[in-house]
Image 1 (cartoon, helix red, strand yellow):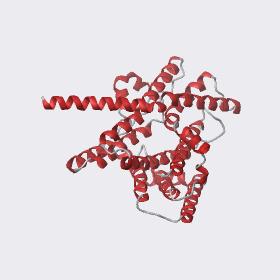
Image 2: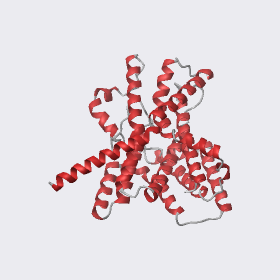
Image 3: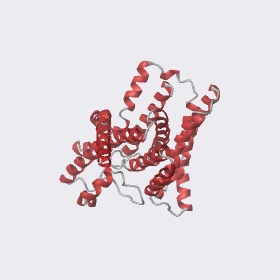
Image 4: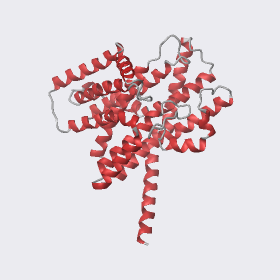
Length: 362
């Protein structure tokens, strides 16, 4: 993977995470006079899925040559942020509840914390037909999809024979209908990576394709075509599926996003080769996951502490600065500690397999 193309993917990843934050800022309790921009968040999530499929396919092919290496890297990547984010969410929720400001929190989950917390730690909030908010953090739902996409891809890619078929089928069954509905978008990213290994196209054609797909994505969002497609499909399908009625817009955006990434791979990206530009983008992208999982509890906490007035531009800007600083600090405590988590999981798996080998020999 060329450095400038990798940097471009990092830039998209960071922009997508910021887009999700901006989307949540359009909730009425955070800003007044601006309608909720759900299409922006949906587009960002779709981009995450396509990028995830592409990058996971790349690392599995080029870097992680065994299922153990793949599993350790994925667990380190996910748990390094998910565990601190869950702890942050719990702390903020308990604080708000104690001060009478947690009326939107799912109290039934806190009354049954002993059973919901393990489910969330195993990313089961949206699989097998189950649907539950992850406490007060409504950004967590995509993680339940993506982690099990990792599982399905991993067993299919690394295993052979009947174990491959059996475990892949099991992973698909565990996913359930709604996450499975979005899985083709993730797979599309993986297919684009495979296509890059076999196809070469002219730079001029690539530049035209990249520009046109970007224009198409923006145009469909601005004109409301994504929302119109979702509305039409929901009417035709009578609200099915209940938890994924916006899947048509995800398919539209996912197809265009995948096509855009396909073309960009062949573009000349000289503007990203500068050392300062590259380092800045890579640094910002290293906080992407932390931003995604920590911004909602940070928004709720700071909004309460400062007595946020959604009709005040000054208050909204101040809140945005506080949230940005919180996500930045959270990133150092979570995402930037990924190597420590990788060492831990490496030790844990090695110890487990060693114990298993000893027992088998005995």
